[in-house]
Image (cartoon, rainbow over all chains, first blue to last red):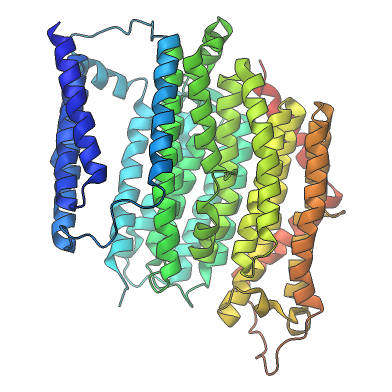
Length: 163
Length: 475
């Protein structure tokens, strides 16, 4: 019962803060709302006994992505008066698409509730670690090349003109 | 012999990738051409390893087979031609050269894993590794705001496409409980095929793939990215990325999801029809040659999807042959664009006025490339279209073949517009004569010319090779 209450509370929090992210005019508020939203989603993952994913979400999204976002907003200025409006004439279309997507997903889930009982592990960290070095060792290694390429490329592109 | 031997080409490529990145730390002031030669050597060694490494499977997630080898060879050839094209591009090429080569090789490495992957997570990571270096290379030209704009649009839409694709893959996992394509196929045959979760996953998967192989209506990023990217990067994007995208589609759809072929076949048939028509219509008013070729490549993707629609060995081998022919044809056209851009700094069609008088050789190559793109015999493009259309016709999609033939006629209109600019229009007064083409670019032109003619008049060996390698995809 408490999980269900927790689920609804956290979902509502994620939903409301998500709305704030896309509607507020103040970029700083948007970034902070994103942190709240990520935190709520991390809480949802905890109720699903996926504590590793929850921690990664907090570490990576709140700890790194949101903090970088705050820095970017502060350093570029205009954070309380963004130059670009928060919405444009495509707003109704966007809302309609989001609604259609929601109806589609919920329709599919109503027709076919995910019946497969995915096994719940006591220690998901251990399982994930094991899988990363066995079945998923190739993507695990490949991601390091991807990160290296992203890092090198980001530096090259942002460094500006070479003298 | 250890299973790890199967990864030899990938390991060799990774080593050269590191070499490209660190070479000028060890040897500062390393001349540009030495590094380029080193990378070409790396590509050649990798190609040798691709063909030398025995066929086999790595833990059910990675497969070394003829299909993968064929795709890897196309990608390696494209990368080598791009290095040669970019070699002397420093006229507008201000950014570091070794990072350019590093990012190019990183993308090739990602494509290698797409070509051999048999497991959704690996395929996805390979796809990201193949795409993101190209996004960065698109934004590589600081002096040009179009490059930044193209790069930004590409980045946002590539991220969106990845999200859509990933969501589709996660739904497929939810419906079947596996990410291994062969297991997935078995589970579908045991009755998971009709589940709505799976169909929804399939729909998202197709949308994500549509972004990657540039199908309408997911094509909007492509013209801006093609136009904004430095032209050698455009070449790589239009040839290698497209090949990788189609290889990914073949792997996932034919190995993992043959059980729901009716659904994806129908969706792809409609997408093919929309894509080729829209691409050709949008190409007609273009004044910028890179945009024109971008829309032309969208239309070409529409034809290629027909190979997936026809599916049966004939359709897929026709698709592989088409990709090989497209490699030579498109690189030839872009080589001329690069030569003209070096000489005049312009990529507008006006820069081509009277090219036949100013440089008969460039004019002839452009003529052959455009006619091959349009599918005029006896060039490579004709043979490729012939095999492809025949395969689709054999599967009973007569309306699609009729539409494709009509589209080919339509495409001739805008290709002929460029040819008219080259052969009929007079050059403007006191146009300076064209400087001679540097040898790497001349080499690209010679190779692609040979490819266009050879694949056109003597298609036998490649057709046979394509037929042999798609055979084992069936079981």
